[in-house]
Image (cartoon, rainbow, N blue to C red; front, side):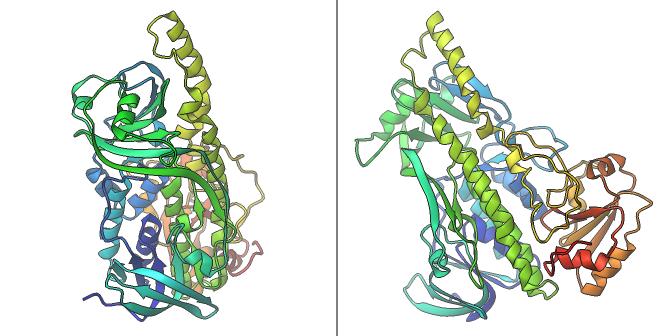
Amino acid sequence: MTIVPSQVPVLIAGGGPSGLAAAIELGRRGVEVCVVEPRTTLDPLRPRAKTTSVRTMEHLRRWGLADRLRSRAALPVAHAQDVVFCTGLFGHEITRFPEAFGLWTEPREIAAEAGQQVAQPIVEELLREAAAALPSVTLLVGWRVDAVIDGQDGVGAELVGPDGRRRRVHAEYLLGCDGIAGVSRSAIGSHYAGSSGALPNLSITFRSRELDERPLCALGVHYWVIGAERGGLMGRLDLDGTWWAIVQGIDVQAEEADPVALVRTLAGAEIDVEVLATDPWSARMLLADRYRGERVFLVGDAAHLNPPWGGHGFNTCVGDAVNIGYKLAAVLQGWAPPSSLDSYELERRPVAVRTIAAAGGQEAFLAPSFAAADLDDDGTAGQVLRAQLADALRGKDPEFHSLGLVLGYDYADSPVVVPDGRGRPEPELTRYRPSAHPGARLPHVWLPDGSSLYDLLGDWFTLLRLSSRADPTPLVTAAAAAGIPLHVVDLGRLPRLRAVCEADLVLVRPDQHVAWRGDVAADPAEVWTRVIGGGQDTA
């Protein structure tokens, strides 16, 4: 029989990627957490998100889960890394975008992990297992949070079980990871603002033997089909004949939509098609006007909804969870003040704004907008038309090459980082330029032994000593006096890291972002006061 706690430090409404990531972030630090998730099963036929970004893979590495996810992924990175634009799977290739979504097969200096194509249910299954394995995490699967009352001294919630029985739970904090239809957002009086995409879409999961047996026009991880009749996307879910397709511009309410015929149109041939599932949807660009109440915080889709173009949706949710997770753990452990939680919205909402804008900008470049009747012509006219279209499709590049967005977001204006008055790179969408300015993700390097710099970072704060002349003692002493867990790593023999960080000492947060850098801390206690959210004056 499921035991529902009557009191818990943290109640998480929703056990999707954001809820499970938050539970892992908290549970690994010994915080007692209860996750309430209505879905008893994860439907593999509705894969939803398929792109796990470079940054999310770095978080999975930190949790010891990156290799486990890759071993479960049905589509190895080595299989394909390019997005191919074509007139049909058996038609003509128009252009391609190599190493899309951070899919590379050899290690790169800029990141500890490459991206991974894997259906979201597989990611969620792994996160469920990892969360359930933590002694301080309770998973209530089949239950849902039906009501939330936010207050200055805690949160009251009413839970409904699979048999209809109700239980009341009191929590010190509640993380609203319950998406667009949950109760958390209304409980704090927060509202979405934004718009929906211009074109409706239909997702189709199917199997086809002939797509494995017949040679395709090219090898790709995704195929964008620019056809005369229909346009959309296709790709493999595995190497055993299971595929997904998204047909753009299909309104199932207004027209008859035969999924078999639609798949054949995209493929460009009368192939065998066994439809496994269909799902109509529209892209949404929505952002909550605020992320928190008194003790309730909105995380993931409850706070923002991204269009899928570029594969940022669930990855942004995981970033939210990591940010609020470690901060909430620090508050509950007593060495960070509750005021530090104010930085969550200040840091994460601008990331959502920028991500929604980048993904939403691709709404103008969907497949139907490039349709042309003679694209499949084998003669000179067709070749010229395809070359012209390839040039026009350069506007799609930011959708597939967006490391400036994925790795380059920063928290430079946050009240819990210490600005140093020096310049920082201008934000870019496609290009990522490593920088160690306060608020930025710590630049990654591979160490001489082949390990990652990130593997040396502690679970809490880490102080990197990058020069033999630097004395970490004042910061270490001040951290001990304040009860702040700190791990010191001596990397004085890595001059290239010192060069990119431009400082002898770099203080790194649990989420791998820089909190402070310098050659000496004029007032170490004041640095820590700022970094843990106790004040905004710099040292």
